[in-house]
Length: 582
Image (tube, rainbow, N blue to C red; front, side, top):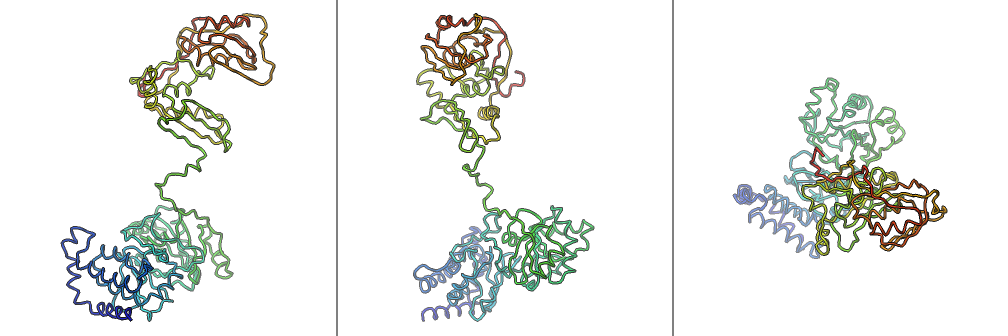
């Protein structure tokens, strides 16, 4: 009984709302409205709250009121468009008297959401919703009868069954419009559009095409295949009964008229078409143009195709036999453009970070990874070491000793340090970097070249230059006739520490690399292999590996000797990246 009384009360207010005209005028002209923009003055808020309280208190006391009924959306609607004040009580009345019908409607709706919507109320119960700019309309479905006073199901969003509200923006976003794309088999809503051309200024309603095949032709003025198809599509629409091809574009009327006015081959086109569409393109999302949507005579969404399927043969096959054309695969845009790529799906990855406490300062190359590719991980290393590893000796492809690397940067303190102890640790924590590169299988063999490129990206202030200069070298010679320490071709083994080394089936270059990089890095020249031995060797020595004399004494039984000489050597110079005259 309470519901009926309040329903009658609200209906009475709506039918005789002329006495509230002064309140509406106050809302429209109120200076507070003009200043604040989004904050309606008190008279409006009072009426809105009255409707909302009645709705919540007497109809949905348990909080089950769906969003499109509970006026959540209307609070936005009224706040942005004060002229809808007269409609608020009317909609509340309709919501009260049609609760059951609305709940049934939730199960059957598959309609587009609206933005900036106004409820058009002129004293009749059976009405339609229209967009604020008047560009298109949505009629109430035919199965909801006028007798039930369902004027207006306010479609806050396509998710109305779940009570989600729709922000009433002035524009629809491509990836987050609130419009849910239709699926094949869905019945197309009875949409009407005022943005039409070549239609004598009349509105175009999709419902008028029921009983015939409707093909929506999504096109654009910059799409050459779209424009080339107009004469053919125009002819098909004229010659074939029960067929309409309706061009649809998101572009403005001016852009369309400019195109048709300039191209002679389009001057005879008389097809009605839609411009400035912001609804159909979201109901039928696509990335390719032209894009054709086939809608059955019953108004059902059939399929989507490319231009190759728009032919007399294909159309007649459907009209006469019900045979559908070949469907185009559509990749829907569901991810906003600003969303980062999923790193778990990366097959090539380069990750750079600052110093990471707890990690060892080291370079590691992993030739086999879980995806069949390879990986480089460098952790907590100084810029100097990155360059030293990346830019090896071009002749031997081995890491150059410190004596062959010259840092000539204008600010060398950010590149390397001579500090020791805790000061060195502090410097490394400030300037040390980490790098991981994951390579796909097809980049095998190119890892080091890519590593060089990534190092230059990490330290863009520096570049590497090779020079040939005369300098001191330490050449390793074999003085005997035949080496007695050649390997047997079996498994390789090597062990080095400061008291000596032992190698089995290893190269002379392997021994020189260990001595150069770690134990004899204080020498003022490189160690070079002049033995002439290319086979693997097996030998062991016990000696202080930091002492050249001790090493020579231990190598004597093998007829090996390290001799200091002068020769042309390779120097790696690290200079400013802006230096154009190295």
